[in-house]
Image 1 (tube, rainbow, N blue to C red):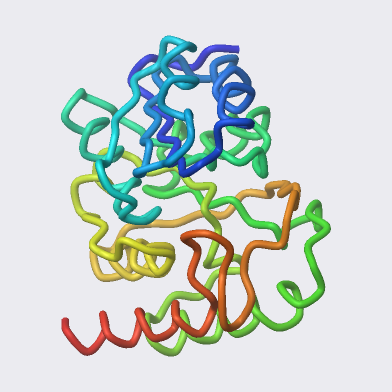
Image 2: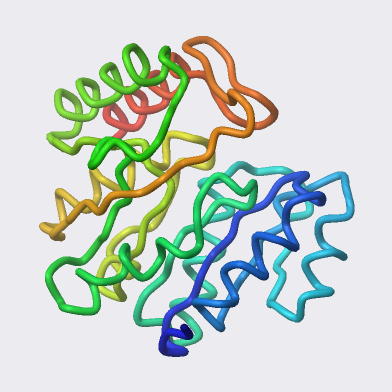
Length: 231
């Protein structure tokens, strides 16, 4: 099924040349307008994404996922998007779950629809994430930002035009997840959660470090504290 052309899918990408084409082709079955952001990759992801005929934007240097998403948000907004879907390049999300994510937005029930790994228990995640990292993340987001959700670190989300206009992502790295929720809260934007599945191809993040450009959980908390102090 193809959804209205005013919906854009933004795919931030970094060194995912082996997975990007399949991810794009899966999303293309649902959404026509796809924007891939090559975030300063050292592999051939730019060329492989271009082969699919989608829009590909490029950062000259690796800036981080938050920066890539803001580049995509701005492009989508400037090109008339009514909804922007954030979708990872690494094959962890399922494109056939996009319609479920979009449903509350299309019904004008919320401004942001957020996928949750904790609704209906569809995702089999590493136990350290489930029982250590995510409970800490929920607590930190509630205490620091006043946001109470089941999955505050979810990267599978959809924003309507009002949310895109009011949320400018300034945290270049992984702390953007909490920044989006905080700015949604202060701008009184309504959030709804929808069940999602996550396929864990590799364990990407621990308390102290992350794989590639991903920051560890402790560094994310430091970023959030700094952002809070500097408001």
